[in-house]
Image (cartoon, rainbow over all chains, first blue to last red; front, side):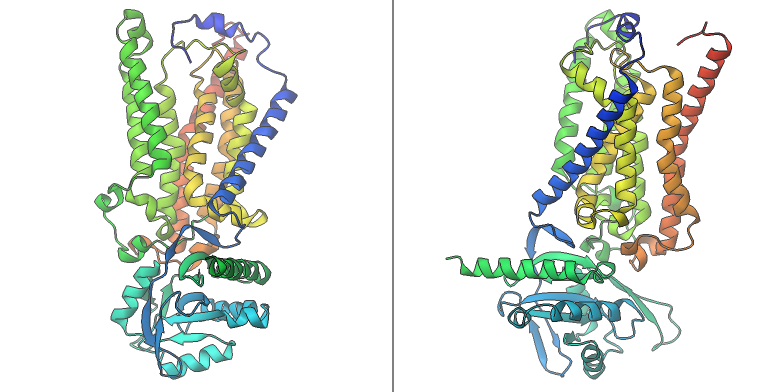
Length: 231
Length: 278
């Protein structure tokens, strides 16, 4: 661009017909739209070479470790990377009317769609955001009803720290009494690879696409296996 | 709308951020570096132009003031902590996008000096002649609005993985194209008449106003990542969606009003038998 003064009327005379023919403009518009959408696709692929169905973390970050009590009343320690399992982790509660049951049910479908060898390296973990009502016994009934998952209880103080570490939030709602209330909570499921890194998250509304979620899990299982083979 | 579903720990940490919290510095090099380069180039050329009376005539003081204000708003919108809180507030997210689409671009366009001499057949003039073609600008703007606001039929992976990082830049750039067509700061490469610009402005406002209206009057939360989200300032997701509708419609009104003014000016010119061409 030059900023020398120019006579605007002279400039306008360069386009006495009012510009290029409309069909040329239309073709250029189609090309521009293709470039924008194609560019977005390329941008997404650069951020994540595998076309994850979920939202991929730009730079996989280490998942936080935590301790609690599992559905059998035993101490549970989630120490990412030590057991070499891929983990689908989400925060929920057993009185949840819709999101948590759906999440557990679809995650179990995902698990069942894996091969036995893959299933052995994949686990689903539900961290309860309702320590007041979700006893380990209740968690056991709940998670076993929907298939195979770990239900983890922890005290409120530890829970708030873990939730913050994962960027999840929760808050009581529709409080009718000390024992009658709902909890609004983050509806994401976090996929943690065998090296303990957060790789992808799905919103619960994405989980019904079981095949696509399974493809994400398989990729993370596969890439983790490849990473493990590297010297 | 493509909600950035990554729940950010900042949201969980503070559900009632103050204005100071929202405006706290949070650098994003993807936008910061280009914005600073453009601002530095602009003010360098401005300083050069001010040395001659002719340059001062072409570049009055109010132009760099508006341009500077546009850059400041751009930086506030993209380099502040508000950018990391969008998963907790659809209204905040939409407010940021609307500042980028409907406030910053006209300010930047009005800051362009008068009578910039460009050859429409060569180099930058030729490129700008294509980018500022009303068909191209309208196509790109509509694609951005439609693709990222009605994601159901499109590739959710691309949409969700680009929403937070790429969409603010796309809103800014496509809206710069739209506002450049409407305000016509580079007549050397923009042959459009005031009537065609008015029609263009009207058409360009429609996708956004339609989306805004749907949000405003929808009885249910339309974007699933927000359905059960914890929202900032104790708002419900539906409140957020309706606020977003208001924000989008109000933000689009100035452009719509300008389009009507241009159309009326064109009609008056027609009524005058073409004796009062712009």
